[in-house]
Amino acid sequence: MPMRKLDLINERIMEIPTLPVVAQRIMDLLNSEMADYGKVARLIEQDPALAVKILKVANSSFYATISGVSTIEHAMAILGGDEVCNILTSFSVYNFFRDKESANFDRRYFWQHAIVTSQVAKYLAAYSKLPDESIFLSGLIHDVGKIVLDYYFHDEFAEILAYVIKHQVPFSVAEKEIIGVTHYQVAAKLLQRWKFPDRVIRHVFYHHAPWHDQTYTEGSIVIYLANLLAKIAGYSSLKEERPTDLSLLTDAKLLRFLAANGFDLDEKKLNIIMANIRQFIEREKDNVLLLFAE
Ligand SMILES: [Fe+2]
Ligand SMILES: [Fe+2]
Image (cartoon, rainbow, N blue to C red; front, side, top):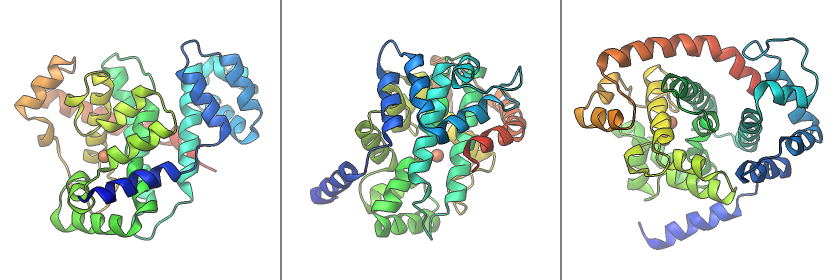
């Protein structure tokens, strides 16, 4: 791709507005070593819409051990500070892109894929006994670069969609062919600008090639697998995308890499995980929708 195009893309990304102040400040707190949850609670209380959202989640059946959570501090005690921060950030990113509708890239499929991926990622983190650090957030925003491309490079993205459908290839293949930059590169650039934690940026950047991530490999593997398993479960970001099945994950070299990083999988285990995931999605659907419902 001519260099000028890449410059143009970088320039446009730098022009994308920042997230709302509250989200930005929460991000700063998240990035600091000793996150002060008292401060987070006070920030949340200043934004009634966010506060209501958090209370709704804290009172959902998924978390509620006791009913009637009515203060943010109580909610933080139940959900945990990290989870509250992740929920708020997810909500801010979702809100930021929600109104950027498009005629040729159906957002319903996009968000459904994103939400299911985030749920599967949570499941996989628990399954592999990994600390659940920002996994939900990474899963939710892993493909956000597609929306950035669709919104800020609409004509080129229309060509990318047409290419994906016509040749039945992954997005990144079409993206490289048409504009020379992929959705994960674009997303990483934006998340850097938005000062997201390094961990999340890497999960997103490596979600199609976790073997290149030397730092947060396990998390990147979780997002990589979650993305594929969400597609296998029937939740792709584009309806006309080539269907995927488990055979994609039974490559010997891939299985060796996964095993070396603590994900000891084979066809039998994958089938069991897949069955569990289908049940898990069914069960969690309402909870997650609660977060994104009006
Ligand atoms: Fe992707
Ligand atoms: Fe994806």
